[in-house]
Amino acid sequence: MFPVTLYNSLPTVDEAHKSALTLLSVRNALITIISSFGLGDEFGVRLVHKHFEALAGEIMVFRHVTIEHICEAIIMGPVQIHTSDIVQGRNFVVDTSGTLVPYEFTTKGGADLSQYPAFALAFAKTILESGTSLVFGLVAKPKQLQENYTEFELPDLRSTIMVPDRVMPQTPDSEPISTNWVVGKVDPQPADQCIVTRSNTHHGMNCRATRGGHTTKGMCGFGDPQLESVVMQVIAVM
Image (tube, rainbow, N blue to C red; front, side):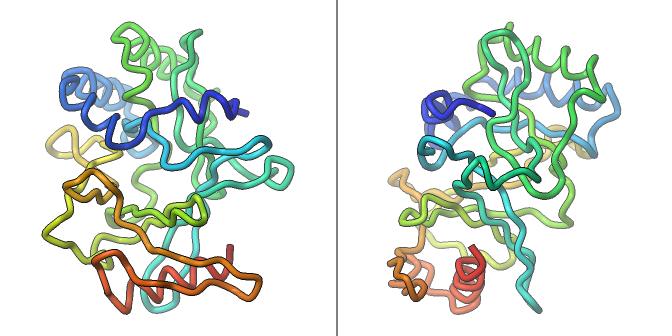
């Protein structure tokens, strides 16, 4: 598993985004590699970042939750390593040896890079030679869902929630940051995104954890009943 100390040294999404803006040629080259191997449905380019720090014995895992009649939501947060036997790598970073290693995991739609050795070598080599290992990485199964997703934070739980863009209300004080790019009709095509305020802080739900559940205190500028319902149902199954 990816060491906690290395995970915690990853940049925030704001920091990674700023770096990526000056490295678009590298990002485009990585998309070209994915396309040339015919793996556009399997992989995309990842903006390498963390939202919260992991504690000893934890890994960050994406878990899917079906919200009846609304959407499929995704929670990403800390899970104890000993309880995470059924996980696969979702987001990969290039380590100092030039190897793609998973730093975030998923219970659905991961990847076994051993099936694509030539691709993994070419992708990692481009990142290593460009010195962008703390900016760009690899994401598995970026097209497994039929729509784009937006992510926002639950700071009290050291977790994020991803919901379809159609469920996520926008505010005047928000800026979307693309976090995945995929092969598309016009390359590279943005996929998922984070919502960040213009003051470079994440929108998030203020949530108080209790033994009996969680009590919301508002959506930090969203105030959307449907979105709050989704969040509370996701929290209930954590």
